[in-house]
Image: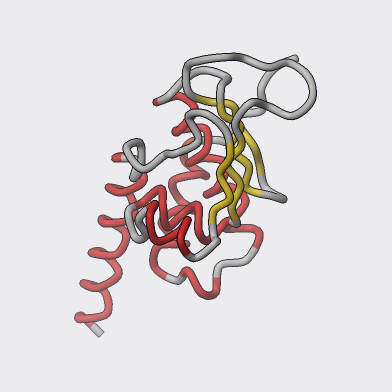
Length: 139
């Protein structure tokens, strides 16, 4: 079965929209932004040892190690869309997210502190926010 892929441009566009107005981002922005960043994570850290879940938008398997094919994976990380995007772009650190209970992580290799933020999403968010700030100044 082929893995569904988010159109990269749609993912970048959604991530940029989220970056400039995270509090008002609806499902039409969150879903492609989350899928895109999860896919980027899985590409950067391929494998099947950890299942990273951001319900209801998507889940990916990543990180080298024991691979599972059925049932509960050996390691699971689950969070909401806002928390995932904040982790992926560097607005939130792993320690704070886990301490606040915004991330639930269990199993071997489920500590992602050394793997986040992702450089691509971090750059996309920074550029979107800089562009938005310039536009605000020009008004």
